[in-house]
Length: 251
Ligand SMILES: [Ca+2]
Ligand SMILES: [Ca+2]
Ligand SMILES: [Ca+2]
Ligand SMILES: [Ca+2]
Image (cartoon, rainbow, N blue to C red; front, top):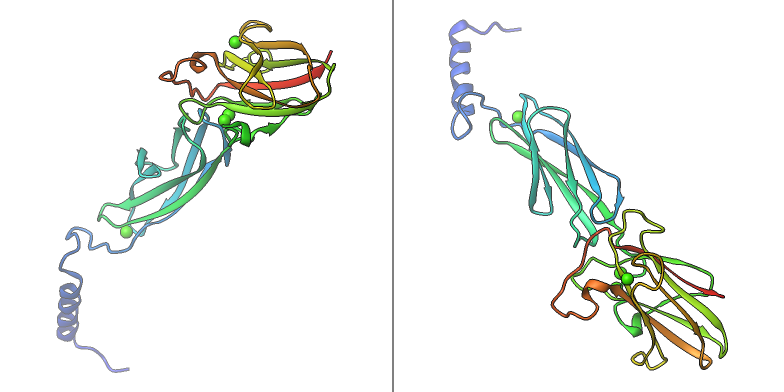
């Protein structure tokens, strides 16, 4: 092996320093991006729930900070490991939420990772019209939610026989103590417009209950919403805690 003279080594070092100079931050010369992964938990949420975001990040020099985003909205930043923040799912959220973690080092290099969360608002949606009604079977309660939009309306349909003695109930706080819904409900004839019966607080507390005898055999519709918005087109009620359980039973 040929020996390199000390002079040549000095010249070589100078060349390397020149090559590494330029636009990068002088104090570190760090051009290596961090690495980052992200988890969001839980993966299925409802509006109002808390999502915990946890990033694992490392860097050849050091991670300066990790910034967490919901879509393009900054949730928060964390400068020390473990890198974790929490986010409250907005009342208007629906579908899939994409979270991002952007890890950066002191030299300004950054890398990002994403994680998604599925928002379960109301499994019966979209049921905003008579045509999109959810089937309500006698004896099988259905859980739902008034929200996800300013003026949510949930439609159901059922078939019954003339003379059937039925009871329609919409429960809120008696099945979910945290429910903020004051339900209001109407039973509509087969034309989807004519009101057969309507009720606000016929059940326990603010809950709705209608006892009725079926006048003619056929299809009926149920329109369910929040009392706060049922007759005021300008009112909004999309609280993420507007949960209910609707049931049709024989009596
Ligand atoms: Ca780096
Ligand atoms: Ca709904
Ligand atoms: Ca609806
Ligand atoms: Ca009510």
